[in-house]
Length: 186
Image (cartoon, rainbow, N blue to C red; front, side, top):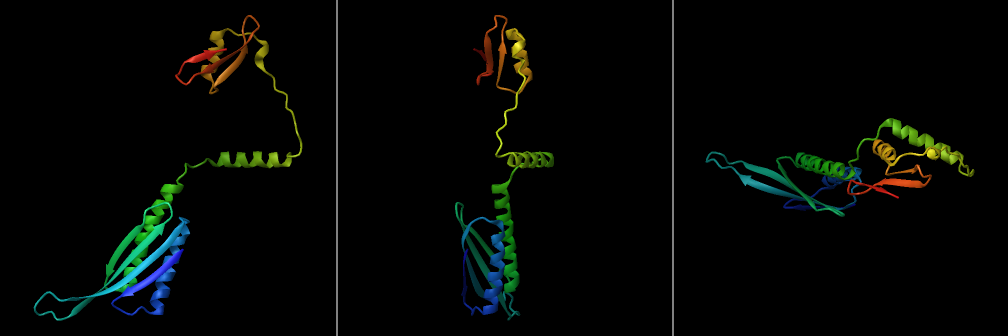
């Protein structure tokens, strides 16, 4: 992250630079691949508007430009009487924008903790038996002949895409769900 801090119409001290630099470092916590940050601090004098008022008002303006890879550039402008307050307000606004953008990109549906624990147990067991090749015999219900209507009912009641069965003529058949919502038979 490349940070550029410049000033207009007043002298920029080291303490102000350090303060702004410290604030801009906190923007890196969102891991959004920030390319550069440009901070321009300007000072303005405003004269009083009323006849009796001879005091000059001083305003600090902070323009914060943040360039993100793979996203639009974010620009914030903040005015205040105090330089440090203006910097804090500008950075807090930038935090809000970056947090929302981070949540938008990295939003994922919550995974139930039971699923996480079960997956971890399965991974541990698989890594423990990594070197062993094991064949587990499965009992198939192919020995019972079925009518096509019965096989269709079994397929409809399950979440599977196809069902293999033996019909009354002892032929192995496959019934499957098609993409158009109908059923196919081999």
